[in-house]
Image (cartoon, rainbow, N blue to C red; front, side):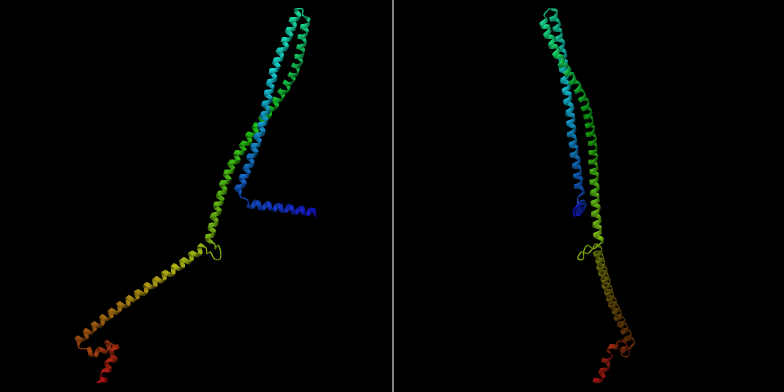
Length: 262
């Protein structure tokens, strides 16, 4: 039972991580990664500063011990010289006192010499550690600068990718139907072209109809003129009465009706 729960827990954890990685903003993740790298660099600098400070302290202590060593050497020599002078003067008590003082100073001198040797070793080791710390900081600083440059490059690529995605989305909306109630640009274009073609055809038909009416009017006018000219010719030939039914067939029933009235 416990193993099953553990497996499900790991599964849900992996699923959540996957969903998070898929939905997370790359720009924000990039900023987080760079912020972590900068924090690591600051911690490294603090550690290096502590190492360098230890080296400086060791050098200060060594210099102090060297000064103390020189002073003790000078004091021991002086005590020995004063003991020798007292011995020459026949003052054995003072000579013994100066010799005792010189011995005490010599013991201090031995201890200080040991301290100096230990501090020298410490200074050498701390100097090496300091150099390594400085090199590590310099190397990490260079890597951080490279990461910052890479960050700018990745942000530029991300912006280009987003722009391309927006362009692809726009082109897709232009060529495809977005929804049942939203036509695509292609559909609107086809609809407008169809209306334009129909309007153009209607206009051409209207123009054709007007032109045909004009031709009919002109033809009727020509027919009237022709009939008038024929009437003049009949009158000159004395053929008006005989040719009347032929010239004006529509008036024939009226001419036939008149004798019936008489």
